[in-house]
Length: 114
Length: 111
Image (tube, rainbow over all chains, first blue to last red; front, top):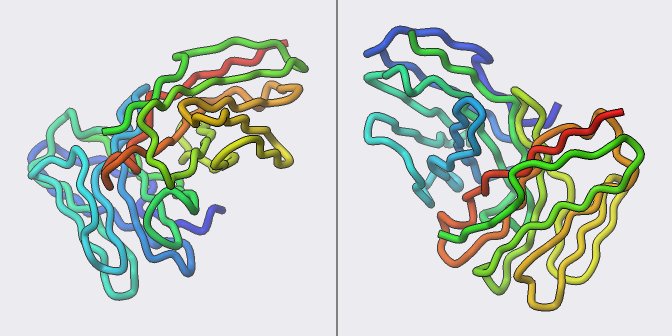
């Protein structure tokens, strides 16, 4: 157990629907990162939050949004889902911003869009 | 965005030492180089991190030359359970680049 909790572990939904993925960072970590990993692909950075504020955006689609709440948990909202959105979505956390402290990843949410 | 370059795949026999090199010509001055291991359908796991010279922990060594434009992850005496994808993260200038992983190296260990 890495200390980063992601729910649900699996999600199957239809095209056009909206889903919410949840992440609880490791205790004491203020920064949360979201990544998308399609089948046999690398990790695509989506977005980062630090202590409730958005800090960096990667290749995140306009149909996707995220937020970090006062208790530091984060949610990634995916709407108007398409077949190509099927992927593993990982959340990572770190005590501060930047790579100097290393990231701790959760076990991911596997999203299947049918 | 910073670009890291690693071999796409490597093969090794059990018991051998494996060295995976990552090129990162545009690494930011103050940033560390970090390596992660990922098994199928699992999140990446931190292996080792360094700034310069050599770092060793219980699972790997990391060699970083003085110019810091590359780094080499060394796995001593690999076993079948080391079969995984290995990513180096070497941030460049700019916030988003600090968070961008390369394509990774798929290591296959066989008997």
